[in-house]
Length: 268
Image 1 (cartoon, rainbow, N blue to C red):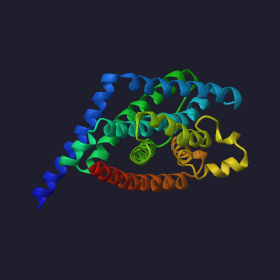
Image 2: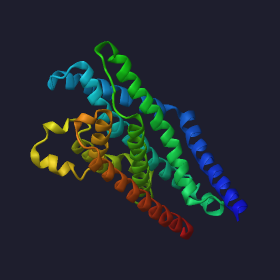
Image 3: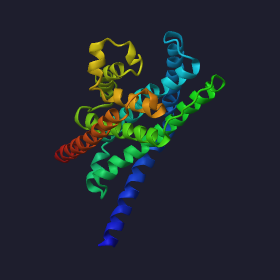
Image 4: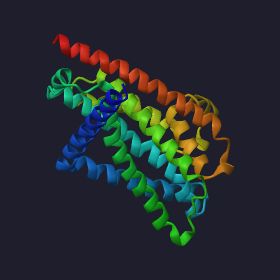
């Protein structure tokens, strides 16, 4: 029994890494997406920092530190992990590679983990880039990140899981063609980004919009990472538990929609 379990785990892991390697290799060959996912968070970080420094009367150090959470979990991971996972599933459907999954021993969990591993690697690269720019650019101004590194990594990981799970839901249920990806992200995602404080600090919102933002998962991602960086900002627990619950629900719903998509492909 232990031998069978070990072989099963080994097979699942090999399937997971194979999916991740294939996605990363395709992205590396095209390079355009990788370059854009590097330029986008860097530019958003610098622009947001300059705006915060000017309009909120913050020091340059405080502006860079405050700009990192909305830039990283609010925008960078949103477009890479969410948009990327949707695009991958749509491409699999258009290229008919989903048919191959139906006759292969690859399990759905391995497929999900493979996509998560691929975009998790991209998200890790974006995280390193954003923090490197924040620290190097603001070094002369005394930028410091005094929070908990394990908590920060946990929040970033949960954000990735939530985005990939949501991407599975949207990609499997709503998107049929490549042209649908941008339209869905614009219609469903951009309003959530605006309401989360990713572009405009939540402090500038009217009271009604602040209350509405409490139901926005991206808002909780940003607030959780900001508090993990600086514990004096508030209580982490409500945001963290909201994020844990949302990520869990999205993984479950994403799994169900993925199974429905496979069943639909079988009938075609």
